[in-house]
Length: 122
Image (cartoon, rainbow, N blue to C red; front, side):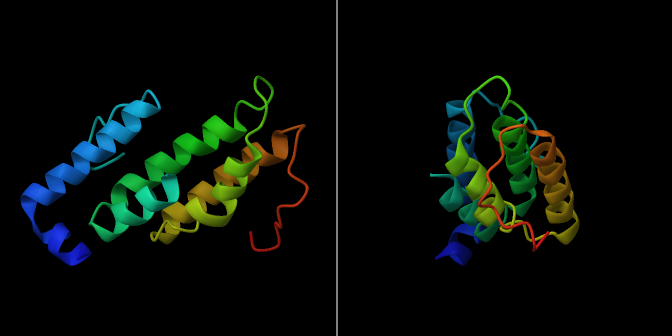
């Protein structure tokens, strides 16, 4: 099924439209198609040939969920999902490593930490 969609130009455009709507929900805008429920969206983007969009989304969530902990109550479930699912879903090793580093940097700076995240695999 994913292969059929990823090979169909009209279907690929619909995926981009749906992704743009998803981003708009968070007040974001897809500026460049080549940069640029979350676990399902992340998995689908990769399967449909848009792996290149996933790192930007992950970086956005890293900053949103870890960079603003002093201002807001932490969303522990989202931080855990970043660690357990969203960052590991990045197929490109360099992008995944860069996101891990950004996650670790922001995570280590926070006063409010999730004490149950296992950092041994970093």
